[in-house]
Length: 356
Image 1 (cartoon, rainbow, N blue to C red):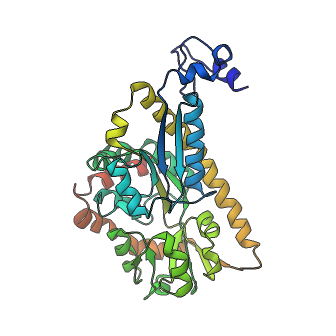
Image 2 (cartoon, rainbow, N blue to C red):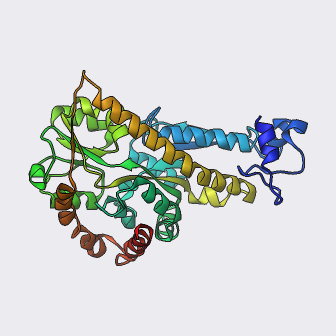
Image 3 (cartoon, helix red, strand yellow):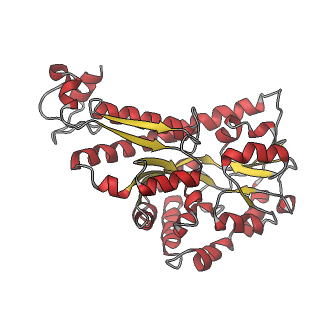
């Protein structure tokens, strides 16, 4: 069936829709050995910030399968789940140094290095619609050209940005209004802007790797956290938190990244295969995160062993948080951005155009 599809989908430009090179011979004539002969065998390592079954890791597995198919098995992509090669900060350094070729990472853990990447920590920046947010991430020049160039100064090339779903809050106090955050030890990534955002609500933010987060919540080292629903449930944070507030105050944005020197050193054919695979994966991962977030929300609602109070904020309640969050954009422009907020301003124009 795969052979048939590859031949049937072939265009006049000599390439199949999934990026596999077409040299005039079909897989049915030569088998996969013909494809393997076109590429030198290699293994690419791909680190993620999540574990087996979670969105980033299943993304890496699917990416690996597609690269293998398109190179006839010559290229093996080895996905690493979180912790296999250290913390999020360790993994960023490994990508920079070329110790790994590829990574799925969240910009929050690069905030002290690539200042502009903290843009994703701004609350209420993206539309409420996760689907519209993904469309903006796909097409944004501010992100895919301007922000990418800032990362490439550090030998990291973001090949794509994608959402893992809307962010929600968990706590033991029930977060419904800014006053509920007063003095709350809120876990954040290593991002000055995240710290400032939660200070605006009155919280006491604490930077912590997610590998330590369950224990931190259990022991009270931190008292609240934010994540998409699938991650909250699959990482069992609901076991040590009594409430989840559906706030949709932000989107969890991940990046598919490559070591810039390694990526630029690929042959044109391999680089095309990587780029086309990344592009194909955008719609695939949107559907995957949507499925996981929907299914885990139902599981949480029906979990009688670890019951969780689910609080859904009204628009008026969200407006109270939005009002406190808006001045943080000025902080981003004056205290974080190294280009006077130019990327934020362009992105805001793109968001406005997409939501008119």
